[in-house]
Length: 90
Image (cartoon, rainbow, N blue to C red; front, side, top):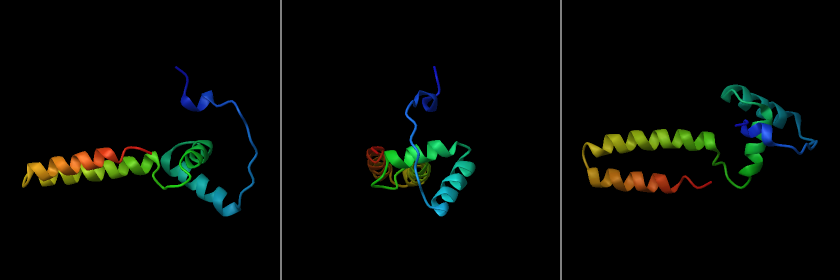
């Protein structure tokens, strides 16, 4: 199967500030992805800062919290896990 990025067929030219371009390039380099992917991700999530990368970071934090809480209160750990899973909607 082709890479998701290879399926994009429409090309647009976008003007932006140098600081925005630098920010996109920096994020792409940090994450090991193309700048085009960062721009598409930002377009797909314009109203919130809830990007897939941040959701992974949040989920890792939630998993750790659930694990620690489960040792003392399994019911509260299950509740926290359920609440965290509901946040997976972008």
